[in-house]
Length: 161
Length: 135
Image (cartoon, rainbow over the protein chains, first blue to last red):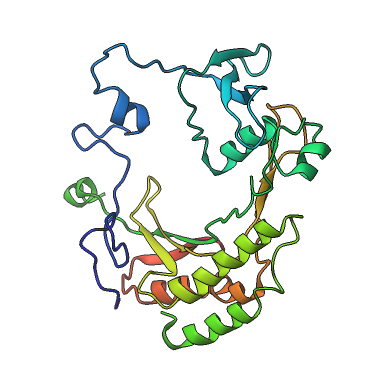
């Protein structure tokens, strides 16, 4: 087709043609995702806890820290879809990794974001950061699918189905 | 695939940067950020070997369908995420602002014709019936 093949699709120069990886565990054909790929093989030394089904609602900041250098004091979450709210105290740091949709949402509900959005949403402004939620780029995609007629499997060939 | 038309696309994007800066923010820093992204995309990325389009060829799924997807890698349209409620369980608003930059419309609207181009080169006689987008 005129496009040169690349040897390392996930390395530094990722242009060219290649067979991409799938999220399938090659040893047993099961679905591979973050839990099976990273957590399950680890021995449990008791140094981490995973809270499943916990929906983070806000990050709460220490009110005595200055607004241009806020310090997170706890993370608020709900284990039951919003009926109850619980908090976890932060002793070291919070890493917010909720994706392109989730991270700005959590920040804005925590009062960090553009002042016009927060006042419209009736969220108290904690720290004005107008770029939160901005520069969203989506891969614009066009898709074509075709059915193939007469796709013979091995079985069909042998038994002339 | 775009070859010689890159410099023309590049100059039209760069000359229209100010015109198509988004109106979704009050902050000049964010508008400056939009222009910086647009500038880098047009000046550094478009002429480089990096692909502008990602073509994904999908082997048959459970139905025996094959597929081709053309995905734009460096869209010039930028949208935003914001909230319109203080209820953290409410969905945020996603505004992708598609096709807001006409200079970027050239690759975006060409996606379908790119797919036709690649499928026409398939010599496989078993490929018959287009299931999506038309069926």
